[in-house]
Image (cartoon, rainbow, N blue to C red):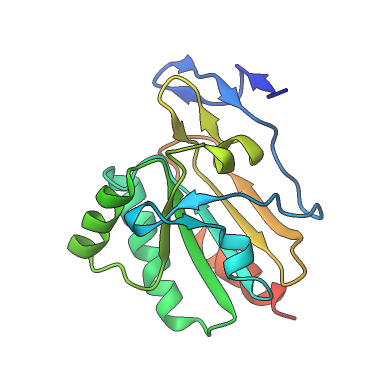
Length: 174
């Protein structure tokens, strides 16, 4: 049964309905399948197994905050070694994500969609029922598949602390 919460995050001045349970540092990262380019099924945790994985959940790439966040993580990804992989996950259609990435020059971050089954949103406590998009959050999965960093942003308009995320990812390499 899916957990329903109505007092966690607001859209405007009203609380939204949030579906799923939050995850925590130390637990095994829940597996999920998302849609990649051409609607191909992608399991980011399996695809990048043995690496440190940053999962950046955003509502929509077509918003200014999500745009800035994804561009910034793309810049950071260009400086990191191959042992750290960054995924941005939104509920945008895969073709819209591809169009946005092309226009923004985003080519280091892997962008996948949770639009079909909302499996990521439900398993990580991110799905906002009223809009069918994701709450903003950042997770780091260590090489062993366990969560080493979890940050649910308090407001949809808040950006993560990028330096903190990158330092936490580098620490997870050890």
